[in-house]
Length: 211
Image 1 (cartoon, rainbow, N blue to C red):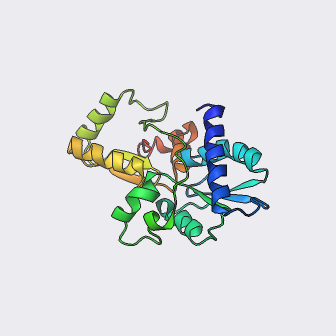
Image 2 (cartoon, rainbow, N blue to C red):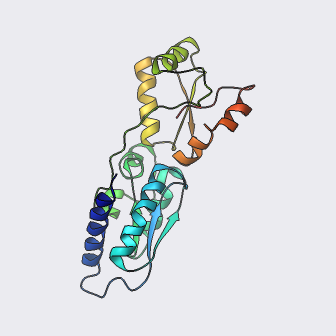
Image 3 (cartoon, rainbow, N blue to C red):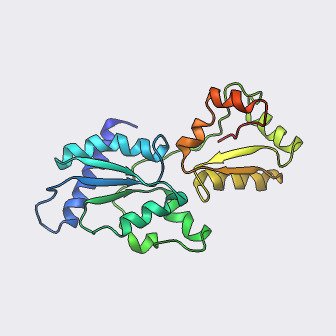
């Protein structure tokens, strides 16, 4: 992702925010960018890459606020209940904005009614990773182990209803083999459990989750 790409996105955000201000002098105070996941994950990284470009174009500080939990539902509610003055933004993704209304019996806000899209920032492929010390070295190894030990292989995701969770559930259906889903509050904590130190501690107990 190039700096030019983020500059274009920041300019689009700034233009939209000025429009929201309805001709008033905008901005004259810091802008809040709410992220529905913990630091270190994909959404948080995108927010921190975007932050300096937004600050430059707006001429005001942009404060990133991480509000993890419920696969982004908490952040959705925080932003939906904020004043609609352009000073509170949500960095969303398909989980909280698209999937949650279909997966949760109740969601605090309807994303379609609560939010106005500003711009698309990124496209992110999903990959399967395991600890470097794992004996599994290919997707074939991973699928073979899942079939040999049904219900023993775990996989981590950014939370119930996240794109990662849906991908894992889809794989489970294709394999016709049960997998154990380990939901985290974001991809950052899930990746942290794949670090070598974590693998050493898991080695005597059970395999760590893949992500």
